[in-house]
Image 1 (spheres, helix red, strand yellow):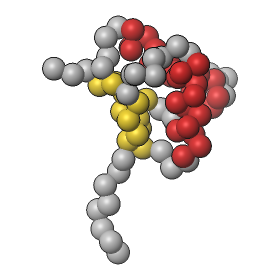
Image 2 (cartoon, one colour):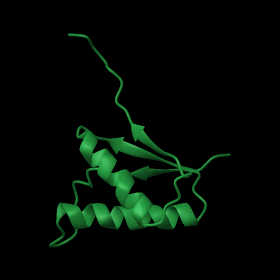
Image 3 (tube, one colour):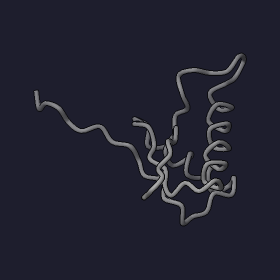
Image 4 (cartoon, helix red, strand yellow):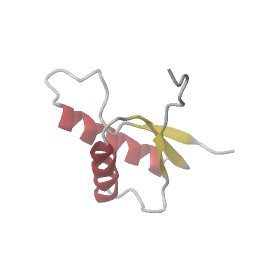
Length: 83
């Protein structure tokens, strides 16, 4: 079977005490690296609306040492209505 883990290109809503959004994202990148090293097969991100945030997230992950061969799949939200 396959182990997929979450990723947060725009960080999470819950910030630790005194944590900035940038620090939150960096913390999640380090957590993703730990999960990758522990045996995760791929990452599916939370839905995001800023494509630059996704590109920066990928860059941060690669700079943190997460291999380029580790898939980081963008999360999507299906359209529920055309109205």
